[in-house]
Image (cartoon, rainbow, N blue to C red; front, side, top):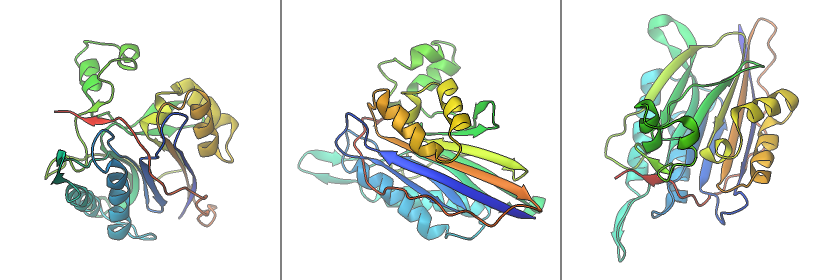
Length: 269
């Protein structure tokens, strides 16, 4: 049984920001987006440091175990944490979200699975050709209010604390990483994105673009978000996995920019 992984990935500074603080890694088996925290020192460096750390510990072409993935995230957290220092303006905090999917081998189940990992408010969705299903839960102040039934999803989108996240790499010495598992089976499509996409486009619009533009969905999604206002950096990875006896050899990853961006995401105090 062979697995084909095709990847479409793009990032854009947006229409308002002057620096791209998003970073990403899209090399099998790791597909992640990191959104650096703005309003703090070196948020752009934080996101880049996180993905570079993962690239070193989870080498391209390998299939790690879940424990190895968690250890890699812990190492990335330590690397981002090391960026924080004190200068003339006081304590400088570097931080970033980290969200995505990793193809892993699970020894106890003798299987290969997708491991969804999440720290922060970037997101992973699964697309089945008709419905878009969010696989991650935002670590944010407004998500806690939604979960408590105090505000609606619509109110959360315009809430004054919508930029406040409750968990991030670099914020603490130890990071609590959410993880879930999905079997590698049949045709699967995952959308991984920073919140610059979901703040501009509804799930219905995102789904329509995925359905109408299968050749380069990431570019089309990013362009649509920028055209809708582009108030934040926008980063998108679309991963397609096809498993079966007739699956082709792995497809090449499309060009992806490496750059950094400015964002006003803030850690929760």
